[in-house]
Amino acid sequence: MVRVEFLGPISKEPKELDIQNLAELSEKLKEDESLKEWLECSAVAVNDKLVSSKEYPLKDGDKVSLLPPVCGG
Amino acid sequence: MLELYEGALDVPAILKRWYEEESESNYGAFIPFVGTVREEGGIDGLSFDIYEPILTSWFEAWQKKAKESDALLKMAHSKGDVPVHQSSYIAAVFSPKRRVALEMIEAFVEDFKASAPIWKYDLVDGKRIYAKERSTAIKGSGILA
Image (cartoon, rainbow over all chains, first blue to last red; front, side, top):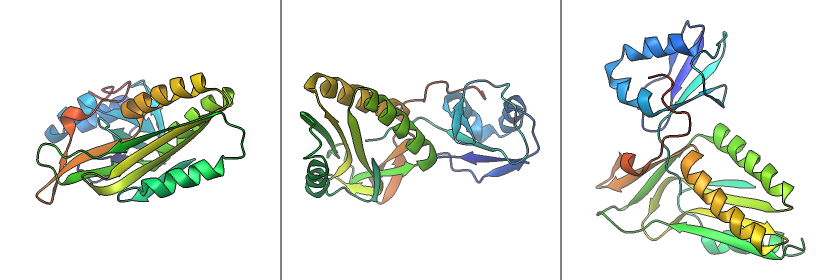
């Protein structure tokens, strides 16, 4: 299982999903209408490293984090 | 060195300590940047969420870059609520040369704004309202859309 966490203002509980890559995660998350706006503007990290490809493979125990737009300072 | 605090920063204490920590390090320049919460739009203050694992790795990558120029970075940021006229952010560069320090403080603070995993909320009537319009999507965002 892969744990998916929604950071900052995305007020969603973490999910445990049986998925093989980020493309599959994308399909699963698109089923939730309330996440649509966040998917368009969020960055993705796997095990706390930012990734840039939807084909990124996932394995059992991985943690995926969605990072919406930031504004520190 | 990355320091995170609950609530507003004690600016005089942090700057004094940073100055004293490096006073014998032979740096020719020390440039601090202090960010203060401004009173505007009727807010009572700002509030912050931080994702520490990625903030730490982002900062460590910058520290490595600074070291290549013989410079040193320090940063402090608030978690939770910070009232208006208080500080939520301090960044500082120490460097043997002023030019390196001047350029680095600008590049560091700008990249901080664009990349550091920190989320800002306006505090209005006791509620936290995500500052969406003032936020920046991290480079590479949208791959799941």
